[in-house]
Image (cartoon, rainbow, N blue to C red; front, side, top):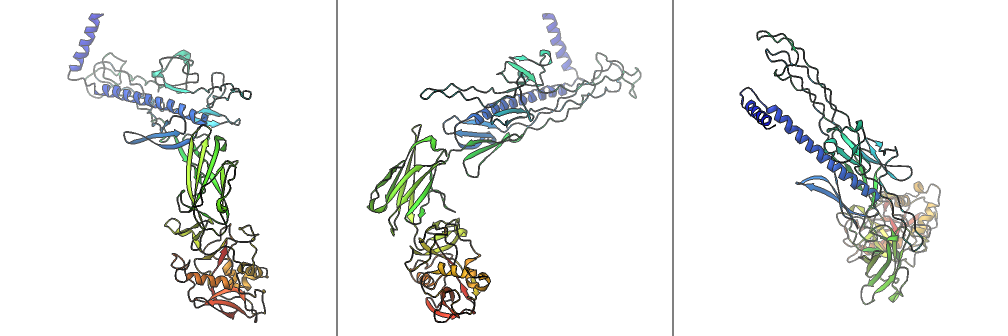
Length: 614
């Protein structure tokens, strides 16, 4: 044995030192094989890691707090998924598919004059990358898939990815623990050290992929073999060197035939193992596998939020309160009220009003007419705030939420009354000033607060939902640059007054046949094309004379409309009111010259400015 070993070593050394021997190709092949094997083993490690992570996603009862890129060497290679209570998990994007196996080399020819080279080996099989996925069955459970088909155990049953729940125990006793579902494992044949190969009579193929569904105890081959071996070239007769003859039978030391062609590249791995996005309502993260299957939805953990985010604003911006009572929706972090044991609302009005509080649904006695209640609802929670009539001050609302695990979350937000000079936005909310974000959503400005005593209109059938309104808004710009009032007839619709009945008078006009064409000024006011009226208002209408007068007064120095951004003043222009002249039906009132009124012929065009009540 010693002698043979020494002789072999000497032969290798001697051969390597001869001038006509070049082993570069041999070492390149060895190195390429090792690199390829290392890449396959890395892919194997990542895919098994991803299988465990996916199983955690479909089984979790936790909430996701964030999904962030996972970096290695400054390059994004996956996602880090963080949970409220559980440890974070990492899911890798995946590697590209490996190349196909090379064809076998041609056999060596007989030493002597060089014959024709042996034929090239057949093309190797395309590289194979198992595609692992998940699909949701009709029973609501999740099942593993392989290349789009359900994975099955040795008995042919589909393999579940989510475990089974334990039986419900009697009240006061703990139920039976649930059963965990098996996690499939993928392995390259060359890496299998333990377990039994159940296919090919137990013979393991180093370059094949194997699947285990029982924790590595048994393995089943799921990929094909290498390419077929190339045929040997025929031997040519020996003779003087010149044209190559046919190759003779294989000899011990003839020149090596060329390598077989490399098999075509295997299917590339997906650049993203899965994609992830937050649902439009922000309640769930949606995971979609790149190779198909049903999306996985996991609840998202959100910030405790009081009220809705104002249009063009931030979640913590003040809430503008309309009226004496306001119901404010509460967004719970988990979205599930069953996760919490109590909710505490505290309201601190501006000044010396003291602090009001409410735990769960218990209402506190209101100091000076203020009040607050807090309660859970089927889908979340809500707080109801009550303020004294005609009280226009701010109050600080603080909410304390106690979860069943004992953790506490606190959020605060300022409550303010809507005031003259506030802007009305297209979503029906108000803001004291315009910003770059909400400017395009502004549609009008509050010119008067409270239901005016001279307004006999009934707003019950509008979005206000009650007989009296909370205030009045004027549009930012004109609805018409010149429209006639209507027919030249005595008391056309009976709007003979100079009060605040603009909505009532507009209703009288709308009751007429062909009113939009016969009464152009009212038609223009109601169909203000610049902006639609929010659903929680009366809708646009043609103002009565005294409403127009109030707008002109608010435009004067230090008035609510003085210097307001984006607002076009009525100024000294002539504007139609919805009020008719009582003494002559051919006339209706206009405002002109900055707050002067006069009756005017109905068939002469004048400007129109819309208003609404809220």
